[in-house]
Every structure is written in structure tokens, then in C-alpha cells.
Amino acid sequence: MEILFAIVIFGLAAVGLGLGLTVGRGPVRTSCGASAGLREGRCSDCPLRRQANQAEEAGQ
Image 1 (cartoon, rainbow, N blue to C red):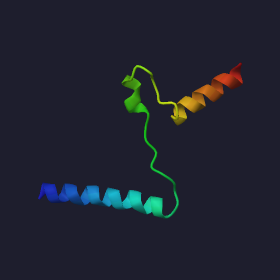
Image 2: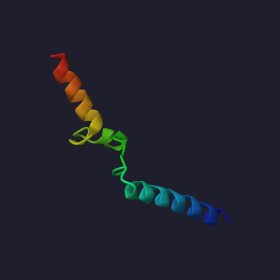
Image 3: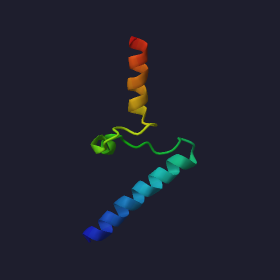
Image 4: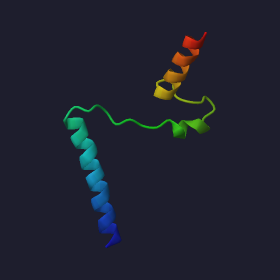
């Protein structure tokens, strides 16, 4: 029974993501938390990195 419940929950999540793409809300946004453990730090197209760079440039 729990497996069926989990399948339904994941199915609803997938349908919701697909529906969001269909109506034009743009791609799903990911978090940058996973890249915190990388040696390079955040990826180059990370929105948090861009905000930090813009704030740093504005403060100069």
C-alpha cells in the first residue's frame, strides 16, 4: 500500500512539473546547495552566484 501511495505522489509531482512547463512558466529551477561541496564552488550559471557578483560590482 505504501508503494502505491509513493507512486501516486511522485506521479502527481511529475504531472505538476509538466503542466507548469506546458503553460509557459519556464523550466524548473534547481538549488545550488548541492554544489557547495564542490572544489570550484557554485556553478557559473547559478543565480545566487550572479546576485553575489552583481552586489560586489555595485559596491565597488
